[in-house]
Amino acid sequence: MALLACFVSYVNHRRPENETQISEFLLLGFLEDPELQPFIFGLFLSMFLLTVLGNLLIILVTISDSYLHTPMYFFLSNLSFVDICFTSTTIPKMLVNIQTQSKAITYAGCITQMQFFILFSVLDIFLLTIMAYDRFVAICHPLHYVVIMKPQFCGLLVLVSWIINILHSWLQSIMVLHLSFCTDLEIPHFFCELNHLVHLACSDTSVSEVVIYTSALLLGCGPLICILYSYFKIVSSICAISSAQGRYKAFSTCASHLSVVSLFYCTSLGVYLSSAVTQNSRSTATASVMYSVVTPMLNPFIYSLRNKDIKSALRRLSERETMKASVVLRLKMCL
Image (cartoon, rainbow, N blue to C red):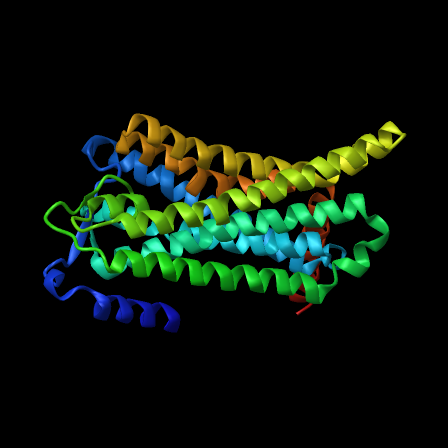
């Protein structure tokens, strides 16, 4: 909270002097049809609650079950935490706007929302890349896995990911803070998206566009290349296994992660490729729901339904809670 307060104060002080009259932007979102608003509110509230509860359950299981104290599930719990933050950056504000029949978001609030959206979306990519590297080491170099994936090294990977993405999100925010905005303050989206903010600016945006495309190339395509290379080596190693059972066991350890990677990249790339072709902001906003809301919601289900370790841990957790409830009930009966 202190970090957020400091950033909001920084935003307010860094605004251009000739643009201090700008106090808010308007998020058009999905508010054009009043009759659909109750349905949209209920739908997004349900997805938000499922995302938070599902990912919290993954975090609880990985922390409480000693069998899951491994690098793979350490990264998974971090991914679940980031997914909660990712969804919480956009959905609560949209729900408030629908409930209050308002489209407004303050200047500082918009820049702050944009910053945290960039932070957590790219963190998702970094964690998926780290998890692909973890599966690469586990399958291609199993004898060296314990030596390579030490707890200190795993913690360092996550820490470096946070530092890089905090600096990146600050850089993008500073670029937007130096832009001037005129009278058109309507954002055809349900959150403050970077590209839409840059397109609203009436000052020169060439530097901002260079920063956006360079960072997208480095922080988006770079990790994707690493993931593809990791899975190329993984598939090569799996094909070299003689027994069919061994191949199935090796592939099953990375099937959930591959599903999540495919879902995230296919939806996000689909959104930006379609927006580049159609230039339809409303359809882009609708499609953005896939990677910003639906994907974080589905991640816990993918990992719990396709992962035997998670299902076993959930069963053990349920049994422990049942036993505790039984003991408490018996003590109350004795008293």
